[in-house]
Structure formats: C-alpha cells, structure tokens
Image 1: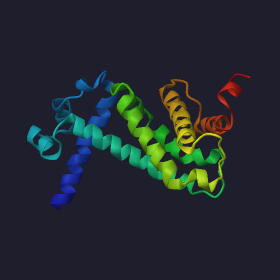
Image 2: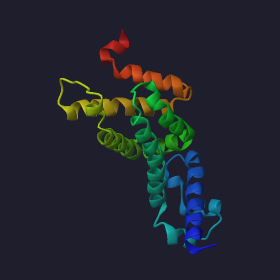
Image 3: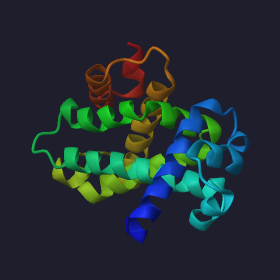
Length: 189
C-alpha cells in the first residue's frame, strides 16, 4: 500500500472512531485521544502524526460533513424550478448523518456547529445567486432579507434534527417550502 493511501486509511480510521464516539459523549471532553486510539486500534503516536488533538478531528469531521451537504445543496439550487423538491436531496443527506449532526450540535452546545452550518448556508445562497435568479422581491435591504431567510431555514433544520419524532424528508421539505412564503404571524392563523 502506498504511503498516501496508508495515510488516508489511518485518517479515516481516526475520523470513524471519533464519529462512533460522538453519540456516546455528553460533552466534548468525553471524547479523548485515548478513546479514539482504542477504538481505531492505532497508537498514540500515530494519532498525533495525523491530528494535533481531538478538536482537530472535530474540525475535519465537521468540514467533511458540511462539504457533503453543501455539494448537495449547490446541486439542488441549480435546478431549473424552485420548489420543495430543491430541499429533498440535501435533507436526505442530512437525515443520513442525523446522529452525527445531533451530537455535534449537542456537544458544541449548538454554537460551533450552528455557526458553521449558518456560514455554509449563507455562502451557498450567495454562490447560487438565489435572490437574483428568482427575482425575489423584498422591502428590506438584501442583507437583512438574507439573514431572515437563512436563519429561518437553519432554525427549522436544527429543530428537525433534534426532534425525536421528526417528520419524513419529503414532509419536512414541504414544511420548509411553505413556511418560506408565510410571514411569522401567518404561521399562527
């Protein structure tokens, strides 16, 4: 096996061990280098030749997960017709990673994962030129409209991820879609 392939395999073992430990941890300090190396069946030196600490693994795992979700969102936003279907593929990926995302939100007390997900959503919406493509009209300055739009989707997504009795992906996609066209007061009518 080539050295680069071995390096990738070892990093995958470390990330996999970290991901397996996520749902078992009550707080980030519960995931230790020792617990990762035991689960990955590697030495401490091998761990440190790839990562400086557990938080570096967390950062890579978050990045990989958000990149995967981001690619799906970008592809969905390229669809010709904007509808609830635009949310299906990204939500399917998010649902498949629900355990890890829930754990990341819980362990970071929501703040780090929340910030990273929000930043990714803002970049995706900016990159897709969603507002210009669909001639979205707003009486607010665009930066405020964008903040409301992104935060709305993000808060619904986090609520859905944390819900033990979450709706199916197609139902949740329709909920997001319908709620985008309602004012907050309309939700209670």
